[in-house]
Image 1 (cartoon, one colour):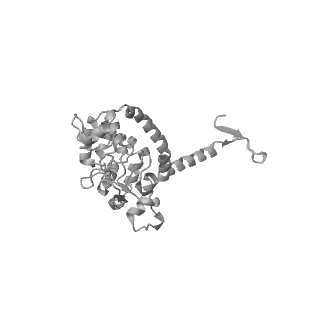
Image 2 (cartoon, rainbow, N blue to C red):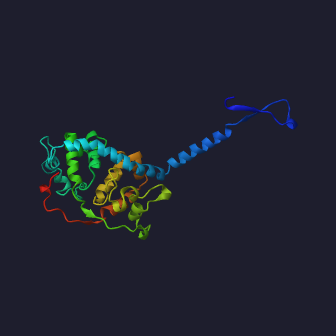
Image 3 (tube, rainbow, N blue to C red):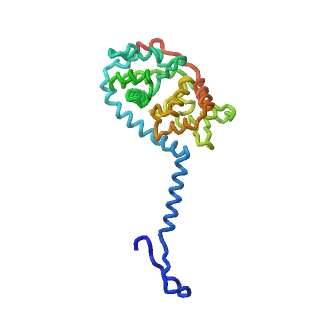
Length: 279
């Protein structure tokens, strides 16, 4: 009888009429509860965070598979040539802005490239080229690079050592009054804000191809990227996670967490002659 079924009333209450019992009403109520629960879950970052973390391995595998062919086809030494001399199409040497060791230039706002994953760097170059990540300096340079050149230069910088070493972080000793360290390592869960370290790793060392290192980047650069995530001028990452996270940060929060990561770790000795290394 489809959704509705008939049930005769007991003799003592019989009136010659039938009572209609909706046997599906309980199921409908349960479904409403599930929908409400899903909506409630969707407003809390732990669900997005868990899904994002679960996607790290899958996304990393896909990125490696996509770049493996081009990376193998790139001429030997091409990445080194682009990084140190630029291209005939007018792309300047990357090291002129990002440093001879790929360590970045904090005063000028140019980020660290050394030690970032190939897949992450290629993804950012592709986003600059397409305009998804908006930057008037990087857009024409990235667009002028061929896919093979992007792979090659990304591979070159990925094999350079990280410019800073980060000591172990004891988050049990962090006080709430230390806003930057607290947000970075503990988050603000009552406001739906996960800790940065839960995706970017302890001490901001980076995790896989999806979550880049924060340690070794300047405070000014980190702050500028949090503003970009807020404004939607760069891709927000898996499940739009960074747009959601950055949107919950106040200006004071951004200053605090950027300053924390910008001052984290200590410099490591640079290699004597980066130009002599192969790709």
